[in-house]
Length: 354
Image (cartoon, rainbow, N blue to C red; front, side, top):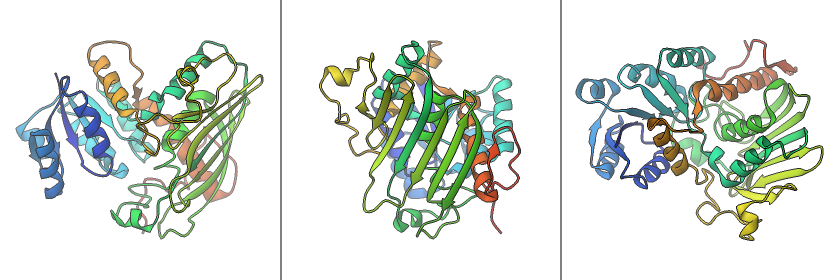
């Protein structure tokens, strides 16, 4: 049985906890690390395990096969560096870190034999997997254009939940936090980015970062792309969608978490199509913006530990989205197109404000 310790019990904890419980015969949470006493007690009672109030206390008193890092984004790198000497494998929520210097450090750990995986649960959505398999089979034509649209609601009450929300040092804006998964999916299909040109606004939110952004992309394969991301939708979440324009067909996936076929490209036979469910998201994630991919992600984690083929996203692959985000923020600050191979001195992501 895989022995896990969870670091952090914030907003996303419930999603991971539920997925782990559904695999309770194969994954055991033996420890919770959480500085908030109430959260630590609740989580440890849920899993009937030990609680620790710091990583240092855990290292002194216990051990695990894997550490699951669910703390604020700006603390991921610090917590990984603290615990990685005691575990060989880490699963960390996206983004793995905010600072590119930290990204280099985390990639170096992998070269030293450690393994860091980044949570990208939307890659396990049924339509996403079907479309990627179809693309890999060379059934599709050449990609011409790809877009993602994220239209969610995050009001002042959301940002008031924790002081780190909406900050450059610990969170990032709609692009880094909410749209990170969708940017990853766009890159997964379109390939590597060559150049970006972006603009953003803070909207009505009293935060340091953007809550609405538009990004033009030029990919290395010559295709174009566009990202539309906002958390200014009111009163509730609206959509998270992907559109891919091939030279011979169109594919479109929508829903609240890229989990619903809207347009199935020619030649692709989908399970949704066979079940006449096109236009309807699966029953367990109709309104859940996190989707239903966490259980599949943990099943893939088990495959990794059994030396089986898996689709987990390692720190190198997961870091590609972070590099793109810094290029986007550089463009927003300068008002100029930015090469993905350039430097990003004006990007404030991961930086404390004065």
